[in-house]
Image (cartoon, rainbow, N blue to C red; front, side, top):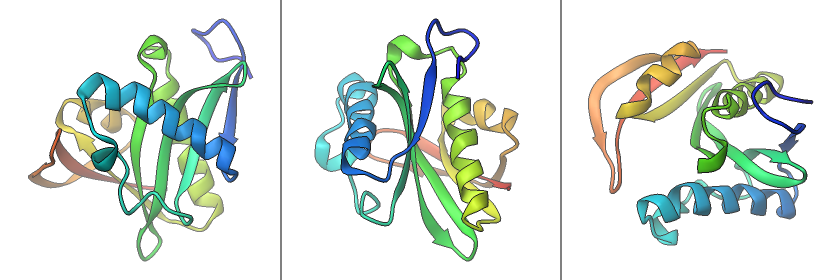
Length: 152
C-alpha cells in the first residue's frame, strides 16, 4: 500500500493487540508529548481503555501515525488523539488515519463521528467533511479546541 508522497509502503493496522496499541502510544508520546511537553497523566486519560479502538499506520513495521476512537453516544463516536510523527507530516497521513477510522466506525454501525479539533486544525477537518457543531471554545490544559461532527 504505497502512499503518494512517501518512499515506502504504509500499512494500516486496526490495533486490537497490545503490541499494536503500544505503537499508538509511542506515536502519541513522541509526536505530541515530547513536542508539547504533555505529561503522561495528561496524554492518557479515561478513554484509553479496553473499549477504545486505535488505528496505527506503520512504515517498515515502525509506527508513524495514529488516532483513537470510542463510543460517545447513540451511534456517535469520538475520534481523537490524531498524531503523525513530525518527520512524516505533510504526506497525507493524518487524513489517511482519519479515513481509516471512519471506515472502521461505519463497519461497526456508527452513523456519526465527532472530533474536538485544535483551533488551528479546523480547516483540516473541514476538508474531510466535518462541520463545527459548537462555536464555544473548549479550553484544555494544552490546547484550545472546537467540536466538529460528520455523518458517516
